[in-house]
Amino acid sequence: MAGSTVEYRRGEYRKSAARREQILEAAFAVFSELGYTAGSVSEIARRVGMTQTGVLHHFKGGKTALLQAVLDRRDEQAQAIIAGKRGADFLRALPEITTTQLDKRGMIQAYRMLSTEALNPDHPAHAHFQARQRLVLDGLEKAFREAIEDGDAPSDLDPHAASLSCLAMTEGLEVLWLTGFDVDMVAESRQHIQQFVTAPL
Image (cartoon, rainbow, N blue to C red; front, side):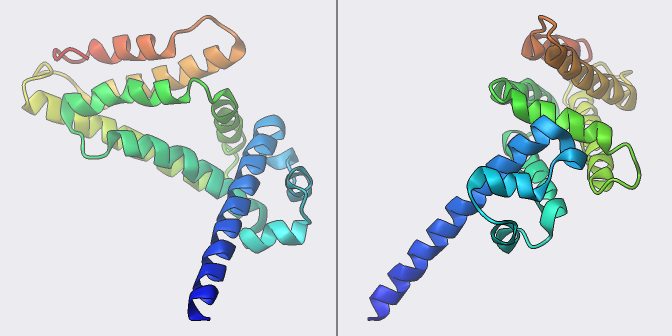
């Protein structure tokens, strides 16, 4: 009897996890197509064949919680690639992140749309994007400092200026790519970072 109860709970947990995943995918699609402001929980619910109440059972913070989960998903994948890396190895991994996202145009488009909407200080994702930009810049600056220490970058390199340049380049390339320009984001990203370091990327 006890074994049956445990198996039942495991089955229910798997169903709940699968349902949550479906909702996240639908939220991602809705935010990609409509943006956060125009996207609605009712539309997300419609796409997964649920009621709004059912969706909110899995995401009790409502639309804001769904947005945060979508944003966190993208950042977690990127963090996994650079985890534990320093200096030139960290910088070498950055184009790899872009590589993993080339078949996820919708995700990149959603992120660009949401980041633009979030320029409004009242937007629920404003703080997230502010913190993310700071995290990226700090990570880049740290990696460039480490590259200098390891002899993989010129001693007179300005880590802060290099970090700003790399972030601006990456975000600009994404916009051009989404607009339809023939852009090799991986190659261009690697080439841009390479100009700041002597270690081959």
